[in-house]
Image 1 (spheres, rainbow, N blue to C red):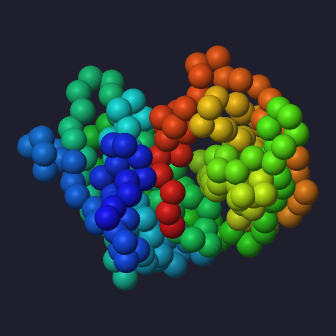
Image 2 (cartoon, rainbow, N blue to C red):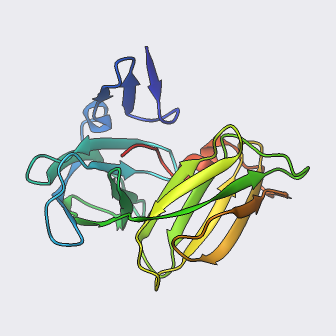
Image 3 (cartoon, helix red, strand yellow):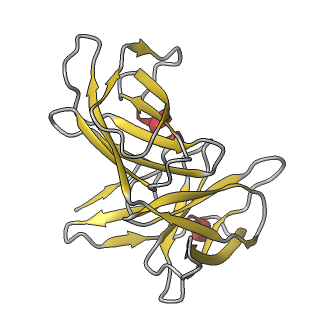
Length: 219
């Protein structure tokens, strides 16, 4: 039994919680090779971090884990013209680090910041009822850092973020059937937030748009 992170994902979680990853590039011949190192904000290498290369247009992605030295190598289908990938690194206990656009083979390094504080609250629908399984995303202002989670059965959510009080976070919630809400400038350590998802997205939000914002979960 396996469950993909998204319909086009290349990483599958097996029934024993192991991850099977295959290379999309192996199916198409021509590929880019991407490699680098993941470190934390003290300069120490981060082992067993997940590194993902992701195409927001098609949903294609490939991922791998860093070695004991923080190093990784993965491949991705070569793109033409102005097409590009985004990449990010993640690990439980850290805030994700994103590497903008990637348009060719090369070295892409990441710095993960330890998450020592929490932002928490509850997601509600337009009828003020708590909602389960809402995508909750937090993005640091003026930074490439972000983290995400899903709301629990009682609508509650908890996002792990760095404790730096000078960095504020923009929170966004999205449901599979198209409702969304956002809160701007939230401080680390804020609790009891109310996220009221009453606005229906013009495009009719569905799983694919959620995936385009947060390609997959896992640390």
